Image 1 (tube, rainbow, N blue to C red):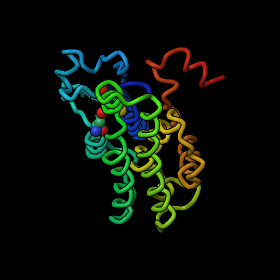
Image 2: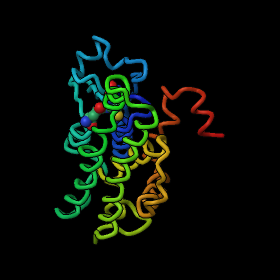
Image 3: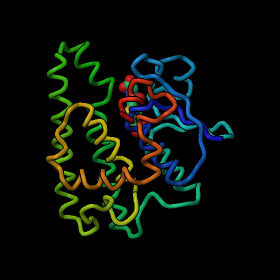
Image 4: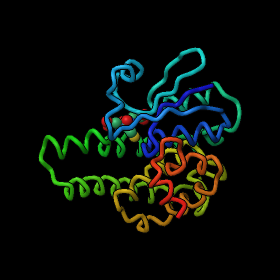
Length: 225
Ligand SMILES: N[C@@H](CCC(=O)N[C@@H](CS)C(=O)NCC(=O)O)C(=O)O
């Protein structure tokens, strides 16, 4: 059985959970509490010297880090529904969205960056939230325009056609995180419609940060209240 080292509300972990669920690959989870700094434990850094989640460990001991590398490996080695649509242009559009989230937005809003801003550069909590929201709003505005212009997107459907793709698997966890930082997502109606569609899909529902083995009890209750 595969083992996913992850954290319930880490968006990169959430991406991989959705992908595993979507491809119907069984896995067990081990929680790595990022707030407590468990990503920096010596034995964890043996697996991932970057001190980050997710890490996926295979039955033969093969250890893989980086959510997009993990998802692409699953795509290449497991049967089941593809994480990409048919057609080179459609696949390129899928990567375009996935890469905006994973290369342009997530890195500047990562926990270690936010911590550095407050702990080392003396930025206040309020300024930190402004920083977070700035990069979310810029990137979501671009994605909204791209969805609007794309011949491959229909309002109320997934990012790129009638089935979920890597684009949705990156976008939805980032939207989840944006809401945690009080970003006003109603500015982006197409993205909100994609979110609504995705959250009805079992692969996304099962990956919900509020129902993972390491989700704290109080958040579990808040989610179902
Ligand atoms: N590019 C990496 C990023 C991994 C990453 O930084 N994950 C975050 C959680 S979403 C993390 O573990 N942060 C720990 C920290 O910043 O200390 C990926 O896609 O897997």
